[in-house]
Structures are given as structure tokens and as C-alpha cells.
Length: 382
Image (cartoon, rainbow, N blue to C red; front, side, top):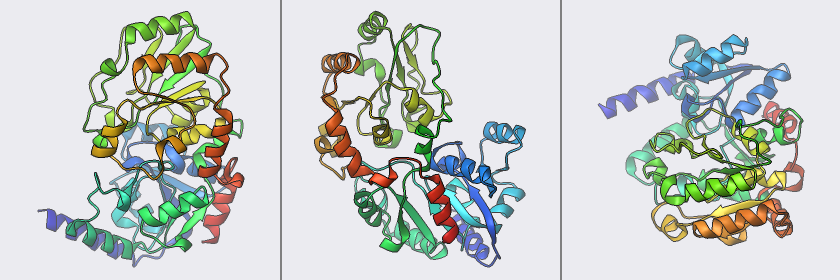
């Protein structure tokens, strides 16, 4: 059954290579069609704003209906309309992989892989723990896919990240374009506003965004990681709202935090991550690349790395020495976490020089601001 399914997929993919593509048409998608988010979302919005013919591809009916109600170009994945658009588009703009759009319809298209974050932990071909990149089946699949999409380009943020992308995506230097992340333009262009996430009065918003473990197969149990009663009392006394936003892969953990006045579990709520980061006064994370985006805001970061050794052994290796690229306190337990929060909200500035140093590793100087205009110009020249 699987062999037959793969045969049909590649037949359609290679058949789509015969189609004449429209030079002015972009199809965009993210997270296998589930989300309206990430770098491809912001490229889509910028492209539309600048008169480009761009269409969002999604399998999420709520997203489809929402965009449709705003008269924004959108197509529902799996429909004739969506498949036709993907066969006609010269450009397929993605954030996680080719299944962000109609993967078997973009043979011969120029694939613009904007990716979904700057990697701290090893990904794709470099990930030898969780990825299946070395099996015979996967090698054959990748070769056939890569032949159909020779014109695939990856967009990085600095010299260091460009070298990582060459390795993890097994591509040559000419297919790495160093510009920046479209999604971070909103930190600088004035389109985001400060918003409230609760009716509770608070002066500071602290957001905890742990990454997934084992691709979401391991539950991130907030009840065992945080002393919620103590944390809630601390937040009330210091006029803090503590918001928890677990990784997309852990959205169905089934352990929602409830019943606390100053702690909100936002995991299963739909929100724009960049907007959330923009509103955050202190970010707490572990090995998630969300902090690399947050570096651009020059605000305090705390790293709650309670399982560091286990994570390296059982989940992901890293591209960097952890302590070298994590500018902020490292909390190994809850007591240390509270101490770090206390320092962060009371004006600690020790992290600023280190933050600037690390920011320059992940972003070249010209990519630490608005980049969408350069991105669109470069794609047009491809």
C-alpha cells in the first residue's frame, strides 16, 4: 500500500514538471497546511501589500474561512483550485517543508524555503537522533524529490547559519541566500501594538515557551516543572502575568494549567508567536529557537534547562556550545528559576553585552532590522 502511495505521489510530482508556470504567481503555506503563521505568512502579507499575486494554501477550514472573509487570496488544500494553483505557480514559499502546500504539484517550481527558526539544535540531515534521513527509503525519497525541485533556495541570517544550512539541507552555497527572517519585520515596522492577555492587572508579562521533547511524543508536564502555587503567589505580589505557551507538537498533552489568577496556559489558544514575543517583558525557554528571534528585542531571557544532559543524549545534539550562545541565567531547578525572574524584573542589565555578542552570531548586522523588501527583490531575481 505504501509503495503504491509513493508511486502515485511521484507520478503526480513529475507530471507537474511538464506544466508551464506563471512567473507572477506565488503559493504560500506553513506547518503542513495547519497554521497561518511563520516566515511564509509574513512574506505572503508583504507580497500582497506590494501588489504581488500570492495565494495562501491551507487545510485548516477556520483559517480558510477567516482569510476568505477578508477577501484575501486563499485555497483549501486538496481541492481542484488549490492543486491547479500549485501546478501553475512559479514560486512555492514554505516554512517547514513542501507539504506546507500541495507537495506533489510543485515539480519544477522555484521553492523558497524560509524555514521556521534559526536552529540551535541539529535538524534535517544533521539530526542523527530523531530524524530518518539515512534509511534507504528516505534516501530514495529525498533523491527523487530533490530532482523534481532542483530550484530550491534556503534563506539564512548570517555566515554561521549559512554554513549550517549547507550541511543540514545538503545543498550548495549558491542555494543559500543570506537575508533574514520575514517574520521579524513586525518587531520594527510599527504594525504590532501592546495588548493585554488577561483581565488581571499586571505590569510585566513573562512567557514560558519550552520546546518539544522527542517531536512531541514526550509530555511536557508543567505541574512537575513548576511549583504553581508558589509561582502564582510570587506573580500576584509582583504584578506579573505568567503565560505558558508550549510547542505546537505538545498542544495535545492534555495537561492544561487551570485555576490560577496570574498564570495562564496559552498552549491550545491560537495566537501569533511574533505578537506574543513583542508583548513579552521576560522570555523563559530552554532549547527553543524562539529566543533567537527574541534577541532582536534586547530584553532579558532566562533558560530553564532542567534536563540539559538528558536532552542531548535522548533528543537533539546542538550546533553550538549551549553556554556560548544563551545570553541569560541558566536555571536548573525551580528555586533557581524564581531567583532569575527576580533579577530580570528588577533591572538586571548584566546580560546586555552578552546578548549583543550572541545576536551578532545569529544575525549579520544588515539583517537585524526590516528585511522583507530585500527578500522580495531577491526572489524576483531568481
